[in-house]
Image (cartoon, rainbow, N blue to C red):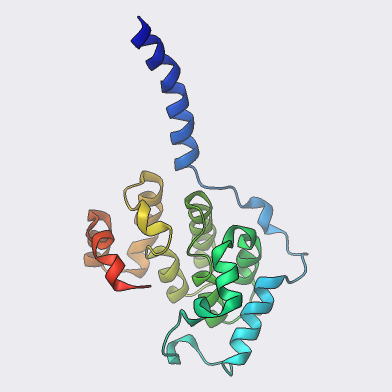
Length: 188
């Protein structure tokens, strides 16, 4: 009887944890267009201007923004800047290169916020506000997402978006878990 009581008490707790873990963060509060540019916008603009507005494809390392002190500060606590990142992705006044750099700074979002970021990016991709390369960067697991290839909610989002931006072999490689085992040597 004592064992049954513990199971009955533990089961609801596990269900609450599972629900919280599998549900994306609601980033609907981030849709306001009337907010002033913040620190992320300044970092992205300064980085882009400091590199003479060079397209990310022409750079040696598209993730170099992560090695700057400002980029490291933002990448270390991206949840503070996620709404501003979504504003940058949504805005037509930012280039696709600036959107690539912004996405790179969001790699370490907690998984619930990253799934919300994936949902919002999906919407922007459908509306053609971000291009295929930005969406590829969002979908291909890096940072936090690399450790959640097994999570059903993440897999559902990946399976929704990956066919439009990744090859079938890479999709199968990620979903099988092999990508996770090879990733530490692959870098960003």
